[in-house]
Every structure is written in structure tokens, then in C-alpha cells.
Amino acid sequence: MKIVFATGNGGKLREAREILGGGFELVTPMEMGITEEIPETGSTLPANSRQKAEYIWDRCTCNCFADDTGLEVDILGGAPGVHTARYAGEGKDFDRNIDKLLRDMEAREMEASMAREAGLSLKDFGRKARFRCVVTLIINGEQHYFEGTLEGKIARTRSGNGGFGYDPVFIPDEYPDRTLADITEEEKNAISHRGKALRAMADWLAARSL
Ligand code: IMP
Image (tube, rainbow, N blue to C red):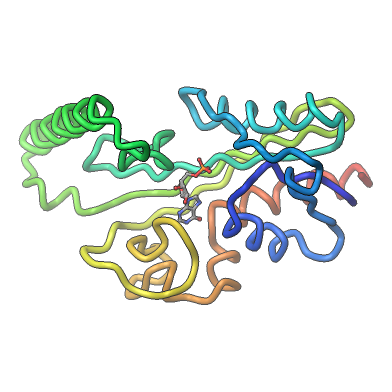
């Protein structure tokens, strides 16, 4: 089936093509003449995912889907989460950077006091993290949602050349000695947040012969 994937991220597109396989012809917004960056101003992953899919539907009334992904780090109280893409303050906005710094510090303090309350040292919280991916599908004007998560931890240093984004510092539970950038794309797709969400979408469509 022909369907627009509301992304300008080459890494996501490559993975989605691999995960969904030959039964899907993925079209980019650019190929539909949508050249501007798709806004994502929501305050949650589902809101952003929906906003991106609706942006495409409103412009071309075509079947489409969007993926919004966040990295949730326990020791940061779940941050960067929905702000994952702009965590480093792209745009060099100092106000935003200072806000982020204060938020991060508050989060760490909260974690520290939780750790103390639980009788654990900060170290015991480990470096646990997860990727959460929310996919919004708009098919014949109706919206459907699919989600996938990948549990793991954050490495102390980068490793590997594969993948994209935060992959060089994310160690999935399934491969405790390697980051997502160390394993093959096939291995990543088999366990990843995006793999789970997109396979759920493909199964849903197949069950309805769509
Ligand atoms: P968004 O879903 O386009 O908002 O992306 C959020 C951020 O997470 C971006 O900086 C991406 O590069 C990053 N990201 C999304 N998916 C992955 C992934 O599978 N591995 C590593 N980083 C990712």
C-alpha cells in the first residue's frame, strides 16, 4: 500500500522501509511537495505524533502515519522525553538552555531524594532508560495509535557507527554489551521501539485487509 510517512528523518525512513517491507510504498512529505519542517509543538509524544500525521492529512488527504519518539532516562525523571529532538537547545537559545539546566537539576535532586528514601545510592538507580515510540496512522480519515518501547541503559561513552540519533549511547537489555549503533540494523529493528510500533500497525492493517 502507498502511504506517506510524515518524517524528514532519514534514519527513521530507512528503518521504517526495512521494518514494513515490500508491501508498503513509503512516500516522503518532500515527494508530496511538502518541503517545510512539520511542526511538533505538543507536550506529549502522542500529541506530537498526531500533530505530524494530521499535518500531512490536512495538506494532501492521503493515508499517512507519523512516529514521535522520546528517550526517557530514569535518573533524569524521564527527560528528555518529548523534548528529545531539541534537548541540546538547537537554536542556541540561552533562555531555553538555562530552563533546561534548572529542570535537569531539579530532576536529579528528586531522584537523589527518592534514592535516599529507598535506601539506595544514586548509583543503584543505574542508567536505566527507554525509547518510547508512538505511531499515529490516519487511514481513510480515521486515526489509530500504536506504541512500542525498548528498555535499556545509557552507556558512559559512545560506541558503534550504525543507527542514528542516540543509538551510540543506548545499550538495549537484549544486547547488554553493545549499543544500538554496534548491532546491525536488522538486529535493531527486531527489538526496537519503532519495530514494535510499526509491526503492530502493519498487523492491524493486515487484519482488516487494508
Ligand atoms: P522525533 O520523534 O523526530 O521528535 O525524534 C526525537 C529524537 O530522538 C531525535 O533527536 C531523534 O534523532 C531521536 N531518535 C528517534 N528515534 C531514535 C532511535 O531509534 N534511535 C536513536 N535516536 C532516536
